[in-house]
Length: 354
Image (cartoon, rainbow, N blue to C red; front, side, top):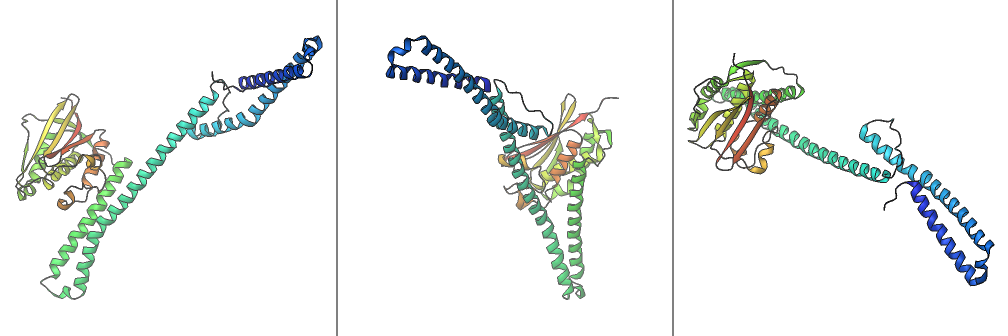
């Protein structure tokens, strides 16, 4: 049996002290004067002194527990409770049979919460370092190129018709790359903060996909990649911001071309999911390792398995895609097998027929 209440603990301790006193008293009397134990006054004295000792012991133990031990425990309990509830006016808990168990439970829960928060802070710190490093890397490359071209022109190249125009054009391309990085970061920040308002309309995502494929046809032809749509004759009407979804499709299909194999294929498929339409973009490219799938939507993240060697992008496309779909209160997922291919799938609300 567990004793948690001060009163029960005090009673138990007082009983033990009194019992020991009675044992020692009887033992002493038997040693000193065995016959005195049969006298009425000896028994009366023993009972009276035992009762007085029991009461005094109980009061002493009770006072000690409540004033010097449980008061401290209540303070710890109250402090932890206030931290957890973010309030400063919580009343001290009432001591009952389960008081210490409540305190122990609160301490363990508080410890687990603090451990989780510390782990989250460590992950955020790691993400912050990676993000700053990636931004620095993405900015540094075009800046160094611009610096090199300008220094060459200042060192006499400006007067050489054979290189001055070419170097100025290269400088312009690197400046455009920097501008696109800044614009993409600004767009992500606005999407995260909810500053961008969606222009939700009813549109045919099948027709929109055909437009995007036609726009990216030249890029696909350079790698001899075939692009097509799974057999779908009827229009597929959805609700969303058409231009933002155009951006989503462009990024996904462009990625399938960039990381696809030469003479490969990109296919777009549509599936009716009751209240939603699932759109999947599938390629038969290099694929993604299982351990990296959860990170492909992070800003500037590129998978280790060969993608960095092929990629000339900024690593922001999938992050923008994810935020656009989250702004639509929809989801995007990815499945992939290294060496076989990758499929990105996202949902949109199906438009009502009218």
